[in-house]
Length: 68
Image (cartoon, one colour):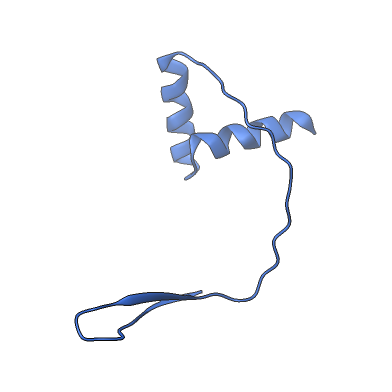
């Protein structure tokens, strides 16, 4: 993917994104809300950061592993 600026007039920029052709598929997902205390949340943030991911992605992976 390329992002570049195309300037129609001096001093104005219009950003364009050049993306390869792709197909999108709809997948039904469920959203959940989880309440945890501060210590658990902090531990989850640290664990997620160590894996360079978000807490949501970290929890999603853990739940997917549980479902297998």
